[in-house]
Image (tube, rainbow, N blue to C red; front, side, top):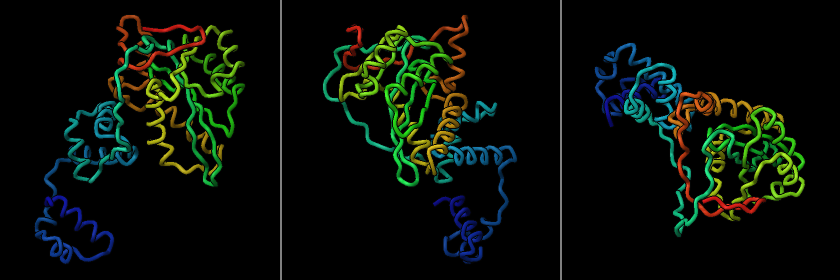
Length: 300
């Protein structure tokens, strides 16, 4: 146990009224002169230390690299290793949520991947409940290339007609995509929805049943949504869930640095793609099984 950690333990014992400083120092094995010695850190160093701990408290599920990105976005020069050291001294660590499963077998076909904004949208449902146990569903809609989340619609029941209305509003705001990727849920394969998408000249990309990894972008988004919000919030009612989810969506698009976008926010990355003189970076390749759509097209 380092002297700094012992000093923090003594300070905690004194602040909580467990015992006096002399007794705490004797119990922990820390010299009182070491406990009372003034800090040799500069004012700037202490300010950085406080900023790291403050951001870590505001965003407890952010790892040290994302905390570093937030500080650099605020025009602070700081090294990742320093942020890691400060968080480690404070006992802050983001634990792994689940063990990755190894996929068996080799993929023999290449799925269609987005090469530009608006080329492929992806949508799916995620479920949660209110404080009294009432279940509700969340329809999420993202752009696979820019990672922007266009919709987080909350409802007790979301039918195919509701999906048409929600997607229509997103199209009015962001323009129509070329393709929409989804699983084979009843809301997504309904005839009414397929007819409407065909009328809008939007092609559908259905993943193979039981293969969620073929919809990797929306699954990754749901993982962040559940880890950073749903697992931490207790919703009193449906209206509260709508307000909180919309606030998180805005933060995700406009403030949260995305590691796969070079720690830009999705909004910043989308704006850079619209700038003519900037080269459009390619999205990372994800291998998977063959996807089919309503026009029976295959993409290799």
